[in-house]
Length: 314
Image (cartoon, rainbow, N blue to C red; front, side, top):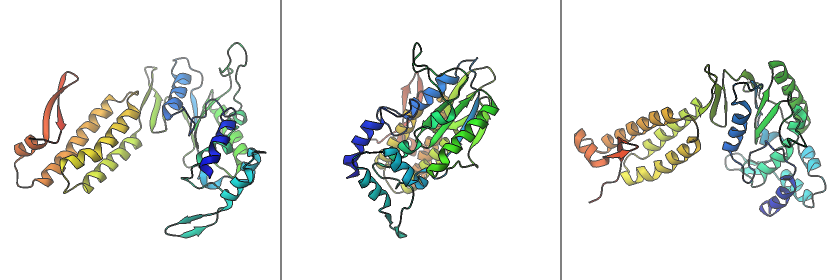
């Protein structure tokens, strides 16, 4: 039933959501959020160099129901949404659990309701836009807030302004049952860099702003690949390729527009090590040259020779 209600709520709120809100909205992506930050900070003389890197504590689990229903106003299915929010959840290990607050993670409509609950953070932070000749541009002197679901960044002119923005946002969030995770929320300078949506954004000493895959994102990928390869021991090469190919392709597609060539090269070597280890485990009594001939071929890629892991036929 929530799947049928969602388009109607979305149709109303898409016309109201803030321009720099990107999470779980049609036609918007993580790359759009990163590009919005890049456009605001990439110039050498960019004024907003202090960053409030904010993290909300268990946002989905702590949304205040009464505030959320108040925001929905006179929406016709409001009572149905209220009953769904109060229905509770059943978990396999713990059984039934009441839901006095929050929206169930994984629910079809939950991300949209989170966006509704968080709407208005730009206004609370003091963001203002030109409405005539430069419609859509941010007024000089005010901060910029970029949000993807419950992850948000505030670009500020000074450390003091960043602290003020944090206080204003905390005041706005409190009645909605939401608070900052103080252990993860921090104020940093652009020259120190920060991570957002798996991307490290930093202005280096030569003045250029660069976006790169973040170190935690690289570690997560390596851990996932190693876990997958351990589970594939005893499988054939075709199964290895079928399991790893979507992971590698998806990760590369996400980061291909960033400064990522060195990271890609390092990960390429890491995947080679994993596959070689798998191959030697699969053929313990074969010499190295036989293993290499059985599973790898050298190809000309980007004007250079590269080893490619393949399924040999014939």
